Amino acid sequence: MQAHHDAASNPPAIALHNLTLGYERHPAVHHLSITIDPGSLVAVVGPNGAGKSTLVKALAGQLRPIEGWVAGLAQHRVAWLPQHSGIDRSFPVSVQELVMLGLWHEVGALGRYTPTHRAACHEALDAVGLLGFEKRGIDTLSGGQMQRALFARLIVQDASVVLLDEPFAAVDQRTTEDLLALLHRWQAQGKTVVAVLHDLAQVRAHFPLTLLLAREPVAWGATAEVLTEAHWQRALHMQEPFDDDAPLCAPASTHAHSHGVPA
Image 1 (cartoon, rainbow, N blue to C red):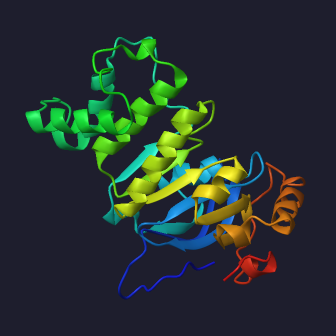
Image 2 (image 1 turned 180 degrees about the vertical axis):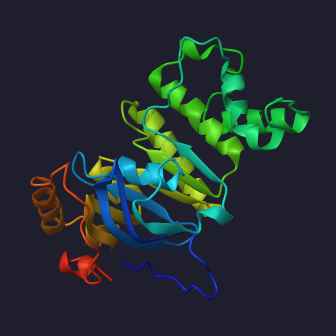
């Protein structure tokens, strides 16, 4: 499962080798080996419970592999937006304060913000259409406005790899369109974006590369070649009998090819 990649001249942003992930040693993702080039815009799709969020959590460094390894990310600043941000919306935090949390890598725990930091925050809010919202409490924001604010926080993190888990779930269409446009700008800047998504029409329209998971890799590569009816039916078939309490299985060198995964 190799992307088009010249290792000598352009090392991958993310390289996964025989990656198996799970909880309490019950695997949720099996034997995933792919490389993702810098500047790629990648969708991760699959049936419910296919291991998509588990994979992104591992890429974010929140879950240690059971087997295999992840390479490349140590050379990059990584920003992660989980499906549920865990932010208490009733907490008395302004939009500007929320966005500035993305500068932790520069200011540390003391949070001493300079005029340059405040300018970056202003530019990020402008980029997501929230200028004028700086002093508003996050408890006053709609779902779409809150997601815009979280994307502004991603902007100031200035990460070269951005991981998104269902970033457009329960978000209005206008916000989704604006944030998709932002993803394309990030790609144009050379950032690598990996997003878990469920809207396949959205994936076809905006994401050149797709990974189809059903606990195991089903297909990886150009979106039009991955999102075929045959691949999707195979994913559904592979997912249905999966046993959450299954023991670890032994890796197989031909594993990817046995499931029709393109090389």
